[in-house]
Length: 596
Image (cartoon, rainbow, N blue to C red; front, side):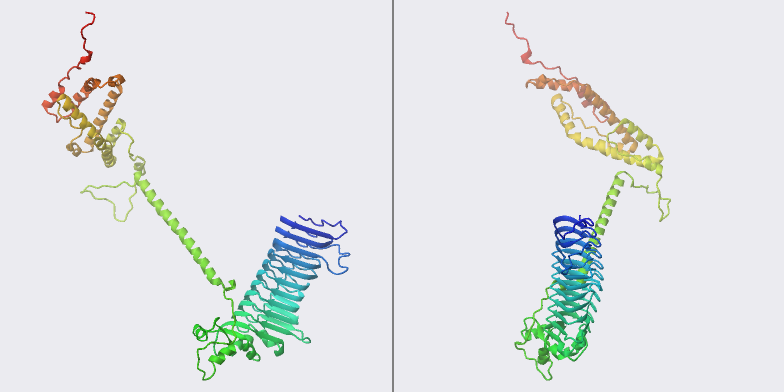
């Protein structure tokens, strides 16, 4: 930071250089007696109003203005009003980026030179260079300027020059200066508005090798000094969309003071080019000279006919070859004057097409977002429906064949909240308390149908599936009894189809019996002593262990005989027969005593 009046106590001239900093701010009247100031390689430079106000001028202007201010490779968001308040010898801004140059930014009474070189400027505001200032040399070179607002440059200038720059918009009355010499050379201008350039008391204006996309009516105007010899040159310019009267300044000039040559107009060549140029220049006195040095575009057929490399031809030559009375077109090589135009320049990018492309991108992104929202909504709807169905909220309503609904058509049937609060859910395991609860609900008419459905689901889950899983194991045990004990194969424990036909109550009773049997089996398994490890230590123990297992399961066999009503009497007596005693092991018998 350079504070206000930082060098007020210094009697000598100040030379300051700020180099390679990220941020720098210079406050009001920071330099009381400034000779030279240089700001370079600064990421963000901030100026305030009257930053360069020199309060001590003794000895500085004795031999003329000598204060120079240079900005090199800096970035400024704006140049505020009255930033350059005192008279200066030179203000040079190069390789820099400036957001806006505000009104009266260069408000000094006199600045010898302002040079904007190779910089990017967003907007030069109205009266940035006011009419009360004298800028001897105002030069803009190799700059990229987005907009010159109306009345942006109003100062008096001996030499005003814009060279090798690209300007998007020059508004109406943007440059209205009193200048002796004006040079517009090798610039690319997209929109050259009406009355954009106005010069008073000019001596020489040179507009050369400029590429102008849109040139509006009365684009250049001015008053020249009558007592001096004036010269206006319009040379080698490429005009793509000229309006009528866009070159009307030609009509105000004397025939000997204008040089109009080598210009290209993006118009299809035709036989009435003299009338078209008359509307363009608002005069007919110099039409022949203008046509003799101007170019137009021929169509593809004539371009191939005359073997034109660029498709451009001199206007006079075209009229002589094509438009002469009684002339017959002969396809032969054209040896006349041609011109090359660069149509790949970025100024030819169609702005409307670019805007249309952006609109397409925005619509595509919006459509994609809407599609994603719709897909998510459908997904949530399906997931929510499945969750509600899983929780039982979408329970089907069944009617008997002779039962009809009392509800009228096109009516919405509401469910009682009390019934929704007592919905049945599948239990993780079957308990005696839950079976008793089902029996109670089965007797209630309001919950009878729901309870029946739940009983059927429990039957399928806990009875049928268990029978499928235990079927093979039970068949193997029955086969073991048949082989060892001469027993008949025991059928698996199943309820007959007749019980299923008796209704939900019989199914519920069967599940209670099944639950009681499983409970008894579980208790017996819990109290049964497990065989010792040494019983299986040798292969000879297998037979002994088999008999012990059969004896332990004898009670279970007797209980199954009582419950099974389909067993025959013979097989029952066979099963009731006691098993033989535990066989003796030949190796365990007592042998003759060795003591005898």
